[in-house]
Image (tube, rainbow, N blue to C red; front, side, top):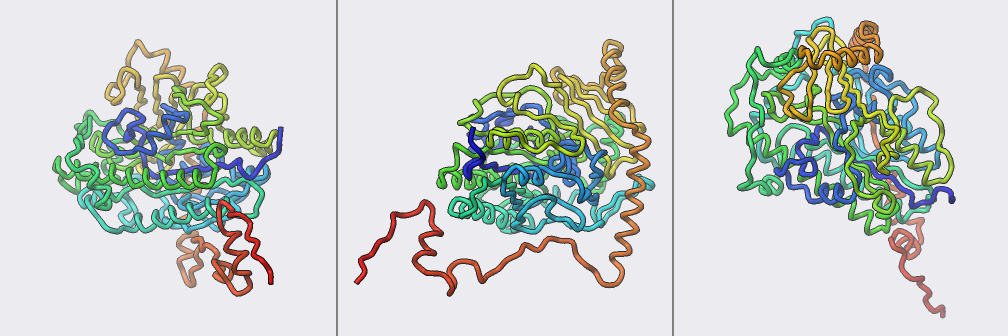
Amino acid sequence: MSALSKADNILIVMTDQLSALALPCHGNPTAATPVIDRLAERGVVFDAAYSSSPLCAPARYAFMSGQNVSRCGGYDNSAVLPVTTPTFAHYLRLAGYRTALCGKMHFVGADQLHGFEERLTTDIYPSDFAWVPDWEQPSRRIDKWYHNMSSVKQAGVAAITNQLAYDDEVGAQALRAIYDHARGADPRPLCLVVGFIHPHDPYAARQKYWDLYEGADIPLPTVPRLSADQQDAHSARLEKAIAVDAVDLSDREIITARRAYYANISYIDEWLGKLLDALRACDMTDTTTVLFTSDHGDMLGERGLWYKMSFLEWSNRIPMIVSRPARFAPRRVAQPVAQVDVLPTLLDIAAENAGRPAPDPVDAVDGRSLMALCDGDDRDDPGVAVSEYLAEATSEPMLMIRRGAHKFISCASDPDLLYDLGADPNELNNLAGDEKCADTVQALRREAAAHWDAAQVKREVIASQRRRRVLFEALATGRRHSWDYNPPRDAGEEYTRGHHDLTDFDILSRYPQPPAFTPRRG
């Protein structure tokens, strides 16, 4: 088998807050997503993919490290992924890849690369300790950065937003990275990670995408807001955390917010199409592995909840599509999987491309490779996905275990939850107290107890929160030094400059290369 070639590329497109349940390839006909639909038709679609933690930074730390957030320390949106934690970017570099990040990854701290050789944009969210929860005051709302209902009340059309400006840049820079790779001299294959912020709130979409849904049937949530005695304990806390009761919502406002969310999915779909078109134009389609996914989902008004931070399906189920038509036949995978499975999968892809083993992880990894499932072989697969939540709106570690059709949710402060997703996809019937399910509940309780020492995790989380609050206050005193990433740029080496041979440079910067230019000399 041959070594890695420049063609053995990996393109990862990670959206933000995109629920699998919002997509046609998972049974929702509302969204207009022709590109995602085509990718799903020719790729491997994981029908039970879950966020490893339904919040931005923790989910991404699990995605990068292959470790659950209780192991890597990525507790919340102001947690630091230790600089000594190897990520798939580190391992792929060792395997011979050029690694580049374009867009959001929500790294916090001084290391804004975490193994990436290049970073093409800054991040959209702060890199400091501004957003630290406080488990010692669990009922306190931190108004400066907690979600509220403004995104829903103010939903509609916008020509520009902070998020649109960001994703416009991310998309443009990602396209440039593909073209630069195709025409560049670097012989290594490229692993390009593109992190879009949409369809994350605010629910504000450009007119072009809003108009795609003119006359469309935008349904209200399948499950309306539940009464206090029907809502589970964590969902009741989330209602307070996002200040649901601070506003009154009409059905029209709910539909408007949902329409804008779907419109922004279409915006992402268009960017995905442009990236795939660039691969095609550069003759990279058949040799590039494409992974399309998200960090977590969005409740989108289901049960009266919005945004994420919940183990319920709309919040925690994510799209995960692996496409390389020349390598993987189209198929659907029913086994539960999670973001921690991405790192070992990428290492197997790199090893297969190179024909030699990829570097062995030096730290314990919580995920497993999905290559066998991509090939249709589930004989040795554990068939389980785990998700942890250690951020705001709780004061105790929360754990979800999805095994088969059952979803089990455990938290020391709350009653256990057990749902049979096959019979109860809307998660309305808690079976934890059903005598018929007693054996299942006991087995899952033992599994949860073996997974972690929840009391010790709580002590570690609180200690980390205290430490980061002190550091934030100290670093905000006197002269400030930002950790926010400033992409390097040298205008003296961009486009055409005086030290270039004009003709040669124009030829070398073109893909595909034109025929040789051999003028007569005389």
